[in-house]
Amino acid sequence: QVQLQESGPGLVKPSQTLSLTCTVSGGSITTNDYFWSWIRQPPGKGLEWIGWIDYNGSMNYNPSLKSRTSISRDTSKNHITLQLSSVTPDDTAVYYCVRWWVHEGRYDHWGQGTLVTVSS
Image (cartoon, one colour):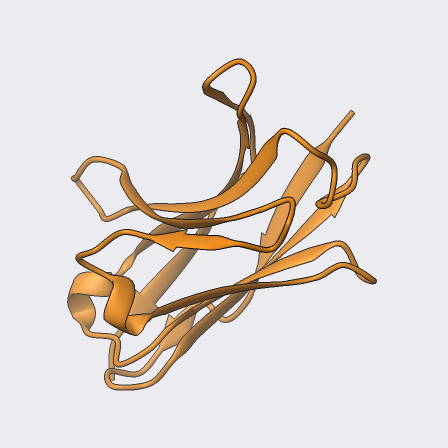
């Protein structure tokens, strides 16, 4: 069974860079047919897709966040990493690591999510 676990600081100061890691177990991040996404949900708001990295290491980002976002991977550790720079309080949200199943066209595994608060 595939499991995704987000980790990282729960508090980040404004203007700093938010860094989160998604540890994947039970499956390889290089397996064909799966993209690895970051999605967030600000308090009281809907889900927002941040971006993904695919099984080949190609990335795609939400245009509204692209200038501040970097998603990378470490295949030796089976990790996916999110970095979001120049954060503001508007970036406060629960951040989720999610697997997209290309063949089925749906998200099939979610991490439990981690709350990141941007505050001085």
